[in-house]
Length: 610
Image (tube, rainbow, N blue to C red; front, top):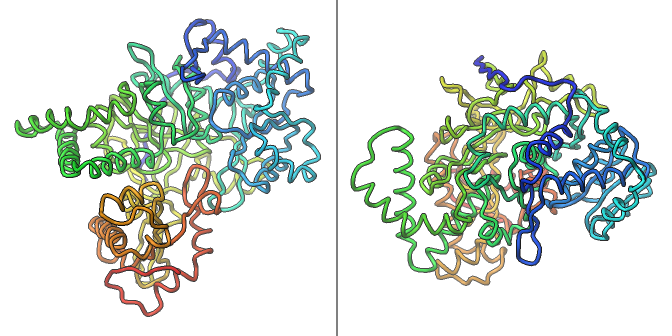
C-alpha cells in the first residue's frame, strides 16, 4: 500500500454551510461581476450584489410557495445561469436540490424524484415537463411544478415579497456542515442510480481548500473567468460553479456545444473546464481543417514539434536551437490560430472524467494552455486529486487536494478519505457499508502513485478483462488512444474469458464527412455505408495498430467490429457525461461479440456488423 496525505490549508468550520460562501463574497466584493449572461449577441454582467438579491428574492418565492426546511426540490435544466441561481436560492430557503439530468428518460425522472422523496420540481422546457408528466401519476408527492421557460422563476419571486429578510436569514443558517446540501444520483453506468448524500461541509471545505491550491487558475490580472458548457447537473461543473462564487470568478454558460467556438471567441475565458473528448475534438477538427486546406503536413509537423518541445520543457532539459526555431515558426502559423479560436485568453484548462493522454497534454501545453488533469467521483464532490499550476506532470491526475488523503491498496484499488468524501448513499445502508473500508472510500478505480505523490489512473477494477489465458487487461489503455482518432466515436474493448482481445468501434458522425472529403471519398455516405468502406476500415485498423504498439502481444486487439450505428445516451449506451455503459453494451451486442470469436483468425483484421 502507498498513501499520500495533504493537510487542509483552511481550518474547518463545522457550523458553516454553503450559503456563507455567497454572503462572504457579497461582503468582500459586492460590485464584482460574478456572471455574464448572453443577451442579443452580448455578455451582460451580473454583479455579486445583483446575484445575491435575485437569490434572496427566489428563496422568498419558494418559501411563500410552501417549501419547508429540508424539503427536496428536483431540477431538470441544461447548463445556464438559472442553474446556479436556483441552487443558491434553494439553500437560502433551507431546502435540498436533487439534480435530474436534462436528458433523462421518464423512467429515470420517476426514479430520482420518487427515491429522493422530492415534493416539488423545476423544469426548463415543455419537453422536460412532458417527460415528467408521463410519470406524474407515479409521483403523488410532487405538489408543485415550475417551468423556467414560462417565466415561473419571476412569478415565484413576485409571490414572495411578503416573506421577510429575517426569515430567509433564519432558514439559510439552519444547516450546519454535516447536513445534506444536495442529493446527486450516480449516472447509472453500473446499474440503478444511487443517491449520493453530499453535505454542506463537502462543498464548503473543498471549495475553500481548492481555492488556495488552485489560486493561479482562479486569479488573472484582468479577472479570472470561465465558460461552462458541460452539464451542471453533474458534480464536476456543479462544484466549479460553487467554487467560482467563492473565488470571485466570472462565469458564463453555453450549453450548445455547436455554438461553443463562437461563445469562446466572444466571452474570452481565462480557464476552461472540460472532459478529454472536448480537447480531442478541438485537436481533430483543427487537424482535419488543415488537411482540407492542403496544410495537413504542416499541422502534423507542428503537432510533433509542440509535443517534443513540451516534453523537453517538462523534463527540464535544454531545447535544441533548431527546435526553438521551428517552434517559433509554428507558433505563428498554427498555435496562435488555435489559441485565438479558444478566445485568446485561456491559460489553464481543468480536465476530468477520463484520462487525457500525454500527446494532447503536451500539445496544448505548447499552445500556452496548461491542462490540469484531475480525478474524482460524485462521491468525492468531484475533485480528489488535481495537477496544480505549480506542480503538474502531464499524464498524471496530480497529487491529493488539501484536506484529502489518497491511498493505493496492494491490489491497485484507489481509496480516498477527506473533506470531500460524501456522507452516505440515500436510504441504502448496505451500499454505504460496501463502499467504505474503515472510513476510506473504495473508489473501484485502479492506479498508482509515483514517488512525488502524483496519481495515475489505469482503469476500473470491475472492468479489468481477464482473458482465457489469464492475462489481465485494462480496457482504458487501449480505448483511449483509439478514441483519439478523428474518425472514432466510441470504442469498447472486450475479451473477458475469451482467447484474445477484441473491440467494438463506432464512427464519429460529425468528423466522418470531413475525413471522407479529405480522403477523396464520398462525404455524403451514411454510417452504414461508411462502416463497410475500405478506406474507413483501413483508418480504423491504423488506429487499432497504434494502440497495440503500447501493449504486449497478449493484451493487443486482434479483431474489431465496426458498428454501423452510434452509441448515444438516447440509445441507453452512454451516461449523461458520455461515459460508456459497459455492461449494457456487452449485453446488447453479445451476439456481435460472439461472432468475433466464432472460428475467426486472430492475427488482426476486422469484421462488419450487419
